[in-house]
Image (tube, rainbow, N blue to C red; front, side):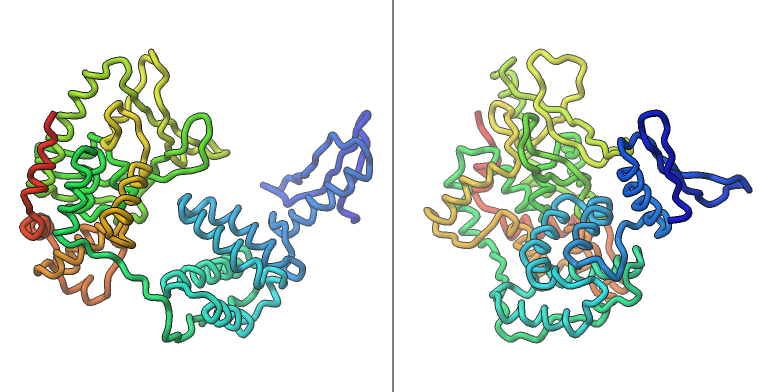
Length: 423
């Protein structure tokens, strides 16, 4: 390689090659410290090839789709996507994309082959259409960036790729809670204030599960009856500092404000009073937390983790988490595990999830006359159909009215009794 020079500097070897001129002056790229000439030659050749390909380490005629997916995850997904999305993509890649088509070269995968792959998956697995759509989304995204961002391929073979028409997709049925079920659940867990208050919060606002458990008291304006949704909670593998993290909302429109209906406002006020009483009761044994910035390799804050305060630690900004146990311990969404085991097995309400409170809320207010655009804004959805976006107006008054309508359809003596949070 004529442009690569290997020289010996003392006891070590160095590679060097000429880069482009800047302001008319020659620039060189070099690295020293190699024990042998062979090591310097190999490292220099690799560096030179990467330089000649504008820093890209892969060549389109050699890279397998499996290797490219690893590259895509590291260089695109981990930079641009949220943690939970990256985890979901990784699962799809490892379970379906790599085993079926990972062995092929990226440049050799045609639209015909990829269509056969999708058809085979749909015929083999009993997934919902939504899950197959997620697989297709990952496939399309990976090829889009391979073509448009990295230039590994000249043509994107997934542009016209669609899911096949299959009559027996497994129906993804979402549970709509009835008033009887809501009362049954609240009565069963009337001694578990953290769970019932979180349940009522989602029930009366349609908030996502992660949004509910990321709430701090600073996010809730009890005086004006408004919840400001700014964050979402997620977990990572546990280490000595815990596993719970707070990040941005799922979408840009997920950052929003929600009007609190009178029933939920009463519940939250009483729950906060009881929490303040418990802080005094536990005194020094009460557990507090703070947020610790997690930075990337460039020093930019990418997320915040919830860390338990050390005993006697002074001069630290506590984060006032809403849904904690009596002693202040924060368990995140784990507080749902035991109650929903009971709900499924003892109460006999099968296949329901905490997240289904969101769909139940939306369904009830839609059925009672709330415009779909208002529902979309309350739920923090990215978009709805073009007609709905441009021809149905929205206002704070309409959105406040939505919660008033929901409150009328969901009121019961059980909810009123639970909301008192007596102590």
